[in-house]
Amino acid sequence: MKKVLIIGATSAIATETARLFAQEGASLFLAGRTKENLERLAKDLECRGATAVHTGIFSASDLASHDQLLEQAFHALGEIDAALIAHGDLPDQKACEHSWPMTEDSLEVNLLSPIAFLTWLANYFETRKTGNITVISSVAGDRGRQSNYVYGAAKGGLAIFLQGLRNRLAHHGVSVTTIKPGFVDTPMTANIPKGPLFASPETVGKRIHKAMTRGEAVVYTPFFWRFIMGIIMHIPEQIFKKMKL
Ligand SMILES: NC(=O)c1ccc[n+]([C@@H]2O[C@H](COP(=O)([O-])OP(=O)(O)OC[C@H]3O[C@@H](n4cnc5c(N)ncnc54)[C@H](OP(=O)(O)O)[C@@H]3O)[C@@H](O)[C@H]2O)c1
Image (cartoon, rainbow, N blue to C red):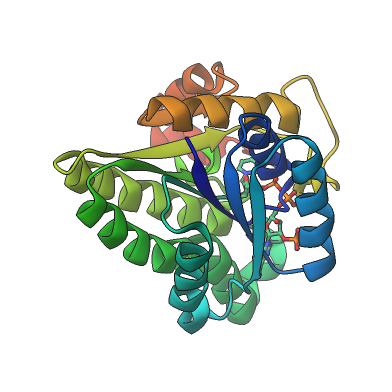
């Protein structure tokens, strides 16, 4: 893979994936919300072997500007072989229960913004007839739980959107990859006590790189989350209601 667009590139997980593409000599376009963080990451990736690194600023709340960022990436890279959408935000569930603006903000960052990017990218790749689109969803989207259903609704909605898009673009030689990580030790989970189920961003970033290269469909990472979620999804509703999940 030669020319890769990474949206939400400063995420701890996406940074690890970007490093692997850099080691292969890829040209990269990094999109993020902070100029300083993007510049620091760009230097890191150049040192690791990236052929070229371009950067662009975006805010997930400014949906109208998303097409502009993609045009910028397209012009900088010349073409796009693969795109990774990684940005996301874990909202305070309890606070969201009392605040529509906070709920709306979470749906914007975790669902509407990725879909705005995907609308442009889908048409680009459909015409190009080759390439890969990868998006980081979450195991939280597999079943609504009382402890984080606002975030779960966004990630679940995103996974369904990707399922349909994968079906559409399969007829045009384009793969669409849904990544479903479990707990990952990143700034997003800084306030959550760590346990044995936590994976490192390196492990998850490496798995994403492999999935993008192979054009896989749905990837649980680490792999054991497929089994954990298989069990959780099969718990009868009557019992599930009584659990404090
Ligand atoms: N960590 C986990 O346990 C876990 C589990 C399942 C799925 N995920 C998903 O994995 C992806 C990467 O997260 P991470 O764990 O690597 O966490 P992270 O390091 O905190 O990265 C989050 C990224 O989202 C960006 N972001 C947040 N709000 C934004 C906004 N309004 N506009 C633009 N960018 C925004 C952040 O930008 P800044 O760098 O500028 O802050 C950062 O690049 C997310 O989609 C997350 O939902 C994470």
